[in-house]
Image (cartoon, rainbow, N blue to C red; front, side, top):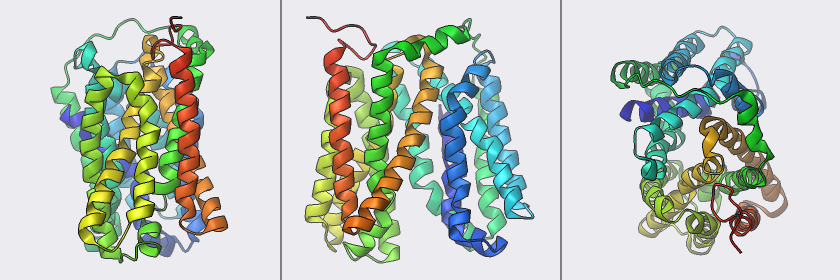
Length: 384
């Protein structure tokens, strides 16, 4: 499991790490910040649009081959990116990792779940999400630190090393379990006929919009509304990440025992975290540490809650459902960040809190609809 976690950390560092070296990229290639932003935008767009179809195409391959091959692909593209002679080449080198992202992600989580008894599937998912959490929260500052302290090229080598070590670990340590006969493309696509699945997809988009309408502007909020300097903000984001890791592990246990109640309650918990941030945010290091720790826990729990909520709606096609989750999550990130920006333009930085609360309310409505319409998360009709 440790190498799957490391691989997910490397993947998310590859995807989001460019944020930390964006000024270096702008200066190196003589481009605008908005142009450099397409390094993330193109990546997310490819994942959101092509993810489910790429997972379908790879569904007949052995998971171990997918995992090792994708990790080596991430590593090679990272090394080549360090030597990209121009911005166009750097952009092109993002395409292959973006296409491998949903395939690796689906295989990694399906493998993680297969390593545990069925009743501990949510716990296995929570453990794997630790890798994505560390990549999201620590990958960016670590990439920034490596780039600033060593070199621009070294920031890419850092990601290449993480994914190469993960590939070697998976190759050596992961057993060669024979894969069950894959479902036909038609049977996998058939899950899209389920209203339960579509409600889970919509809920995932809305929950990620709730999360990233605020988190995308976390540094700006802490600077302008709380008055923190850059060094303190960096420390707060580390505390945010610690809260996220702890929250993931706790919510995994809750989901195993009370899936529907946990899913319905999640938007409420996140909304409360936003209200606490808005109402009690201050320059007091002690109080803000607690607030940010709780915010990080509430925020990052959404990764596990939405994934289990969606994949449990289509257990017969777990990997395809996971790809739907990846696409939905990326769509939610784009929508949330965009809407958060619009709310800032209209209401100032505090507008992101209002934006997050609106999306939290919509998330609650859709999750409650699914919970009331279906007897369980697997889409069985509710008993009268």
